[in-house]
Length: 254
Image (cartoon, rainbow, N blue to C red):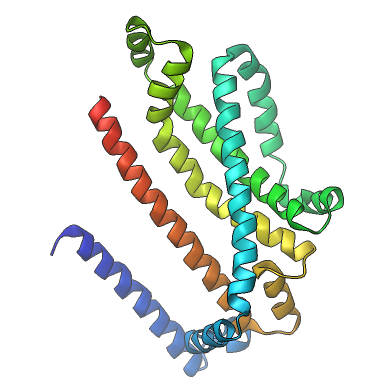
């Protein structure tokens, strides 16, 4: 058995044991199911939620908001990082400003975003993108700073212009840093979308959690959390595959 299957087996065993402990604790009365439900009830609710058609409807709304937010946050974060790295004077001016803005808890600004953009899609996408932006920007900016000057100088000696150096040398070498920022950005984008739905929405996983909580339907709340866990895990798995390919590319270029 290779290492991959050993790790998969250990991970699966850990999850199964945890769920068994949780279920048994509820049966024995050690945990009050009113506050946290139990795996069997959550599984039944998941099936009911799916059969009703509501699971796909609410999930797709939230995932759309988070995906758009992650896209715009990633795009703006990468572009700004390269601009401030290329124009070092601008970087010295604006990097501390961006760091200061990042220190402001974005969740406290959520009501302001709702006021600016309304309770529709725009406010959720904006909040998701702004929360992902900072993680992507600082990861990319740090990656650019860590790119060896020798690689840039070698490209210049071969006659590469500034655009080719950025596109052919710096950007590929920064991909692991960008992916590292994306791993945090996925969670941030989902949080941004869900919090936006808390404050004003008529559908979505965040709205469903708020609605279920108001009726003390804890199993539905846990089902929604399970959905976000699954979605985040799928995105992270995709990023892991991308990261491995990027590292193989780096090995070939070094």
